[in-house]
Image (cartoon, rainbow, N blue to C red; front, side):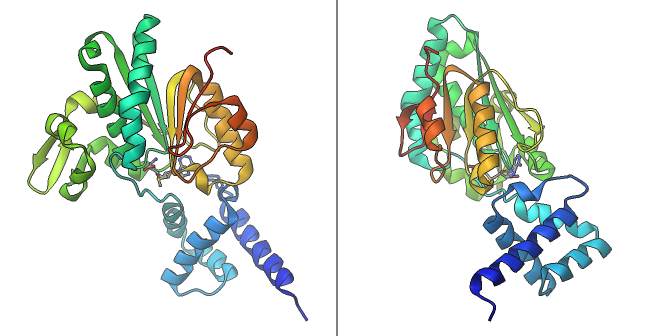
Length: 281
Ligand SMILES: C[S@@+](CC[C@H](N)C(=O)[O-])C[C@H]1O[C@@H](n2cnc3c(N)ncnc32)[C@H](O)[C@@H]1O
């Protein structure tokens, strides 16, 4: 009798073969995502196409190359919102950014750089830019702010650059910021230029592209939860190198630092997943 473990092994083996077959053009290496995640996403494509096995799907992709983009699309889920997880942004606005601004002013530094890695359609980096301008207050006149927002998905980046969103999304922007930084036009709203000019978007694959360097803060939220362990470690290592001393790392609420990395960072808030690189390294 074939045991459950054997069935699982054969099943996983055929998923791996499928992934290797469809990754040859190297657009995105799907083997670096968590297998359970890829499995769930591939299953949605099988259902949509009425197919029943990975082998059928691999054959289908060969004869329908446009399917490849659809699969990548389901893998790069762009779910996001402005000020996602309000308590996280509350702490960032009330404590983290004021501290960061004060330390940069004390050091006579005139620039604050933030990296939003896996920025999807732009809600996260625009939220950061609004919060930063608020934290700077009058000091915004003599401080340069740069929010570098990167993602793998060019379609999401295109939407992000448009900075125009359906009106239903407006509710998660705190009222005081909404009044200042948003322009409503019938059933859409636009982010005002004083915010959009602070944010630059760029395509960057966290698996294979060179990471950014010298940033005061990295937001990488609800992205690496989908990566396999090696990729998670590689991404965190890249963030560690990029963040300046005394700079911050913000992860998603269900993402955690592995113990070895947790020892290197100081904990700002375990609950909100905010960490700081020690000053005296
Ligand atoms: C769920 S969204 C998170 C958006 C935002 N950070 C937030 O928390 O609301 C995940 C984003 O990660 C991006 N992503 C997935 N794999 C990636 C990779 N290898 N490199 C860069 N971005 C990736 C996806 O395209 C998607 O836009």
